[in-house]
Image (cartoon, rainbow, N blue to C red; front, side):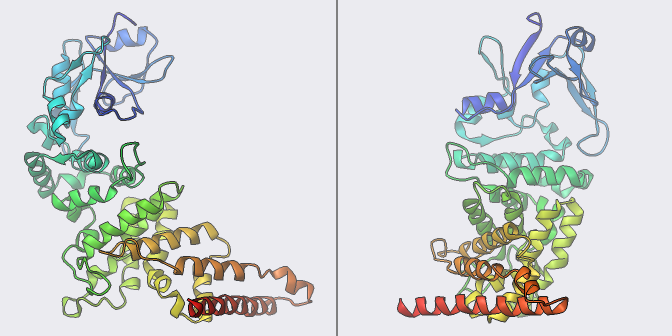
Length: 429
């Protein structure tokens, strides 16, 4: 295998130069044939072009290749991967200059398109005008802008112009639902890096809005920009800006939560109904919670969103105002909401619901550090009510509907006691 001309390429070189943890190593082989790779024990896995798994490390090795656009979308390319393809030709087909660098066995950087210079200037810039041939690159660049936001990266104006040009065409329609959700999910679930306090998935959606792609991919979310809210509760005014602030708060509250993707998706969906409010009613949005439910259903079906993400988003969309107004609600109303949320059987989902609602409250200009006592109150109320078990009433000889009625009555009493304790606590303060 030492006879092969092998280079480390792409993200591994980029992240290494940024002193960022390198998670995946991709290798490029120049001057070799498919037959030669197979004879050395590599396993071919690429369908559209020659990609191989190393027989021992299982890392990916791809033959140097060129591509030519022959059809619509990100799969409409013909591939040429013969031994005469040079490393410069291979790197030319890549999306961004910071991703078009390679490193040889001696540690030397091959950088024909000034990737290191753009890395130092913190610029995401396309390698060539062939960038516009692949609509998936709009989503990828938006995701890179989000991932490297804390490093100070911005998108070059000419690259953003090409992204807008792709969005204005019908190329985005060629992207599969699975691929769009994959990119969105990767942005939403981004881990916090060692050099950053938190991830910035809101930048992903801001970039898509800026280049007109969000209007094609998720028009109901894009429509929120420019729709006003009451200044008393939303000093930031704009519903689109508010939604991005809510997503940012959700990131801060879910850095170690296993369901962080679902909670962050719910943050994006919670106010979709405001896009349906007639302008004559602005800045009021009466009934936006229920109005948003069909829009959540629509995007979940369109992108084939996982069931848990959809379920949580629907509950947050419908009940986030109930969460904010918890202290004003009657105990009987709280009991009804606990039943609607199925909080007895799904306590983890209830906790995730609370986090998303808290993110909504904090995701407003100047509200970031405000207390949110509703969180503990609702958890205490549910915790007290959840202590009521059917077994107690079965042992009393009750059956059928009488058990349910007795449980509801006992749960209501438990919630009333918690509410009373909070009122006393508030009075003392």
